[in-house]
Length: 334
Image 1: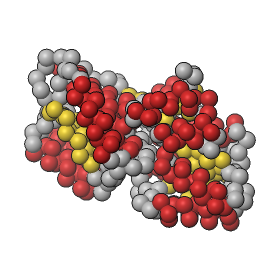
Image 2 (image 1 turned 120 degrees about the horizontal axis):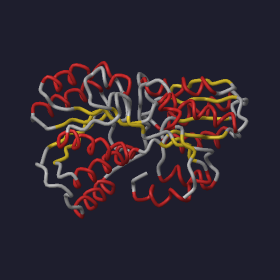
Image 3 (image 1 turned 135 degrees about the vertical axis):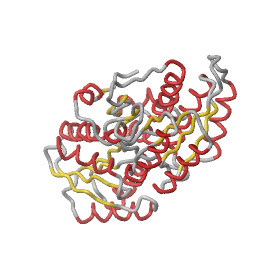
């Protein structure tokens, strides 16, 4: 396998910042059936009690990024003899209600994302009061410790953005557009902040309605039509990369399309040169490690991270790496 350029070492030395997940395209019954089949083949590797862990994320419906996170968590749950419960809602107040529901069920551990931390603070305080250990995952590295979580599993979003800025410099880009598809998501802002910090050129932010791909496409296309100096478009989630490619074609632009996050379509785009590069935060690993770390805490009072996040990225993925990752993306683990 090609040797990936990783920014984890840099992130370990950097300040902590809010982490946020990128999204991917559509999930569905096929992904769910595949997860169930894979889990059914597994056998618990331990004889510890059958604890119940609940994962509550800020995912919207049909988001394959979270299919991958969930797949990793379910695989670890099988190994660790865990009864795993998954729920999600992209509205912060509803997500908080799901956390409270898990507390009411007296689960043995909670895994939660903090895309909009303020809305989750009281729910996590209630979990702490109930003696339920919490691990934050994907988003919320800055607030994780403050909210009483054992540790955080994910990538540092500012460092990830800085990696993008440096990569754009290496590619000789001068005018970049950072496409934000979810307003109010602090992690998205921090990604663009990171790009601005290291990119020698100019960065413009483009806010789009991420719930409507036609709207996203028309907004990017209009930007590329009106500003011919743009030579790089950076999307913050894998499905938006494909939409940006269509917008580029409609605008007759020569801008390079780059993206955060990885899926099978992004891997194919990297391989055929449609996309320049992608930033992978390894969502499978986020789910797997979150369950495993909760199990370790319940079994042996172990805590990893030493007060810092357990980093799963970022990795800059290019055309040279795409072939090695293709099989993993097709099976839904990258």
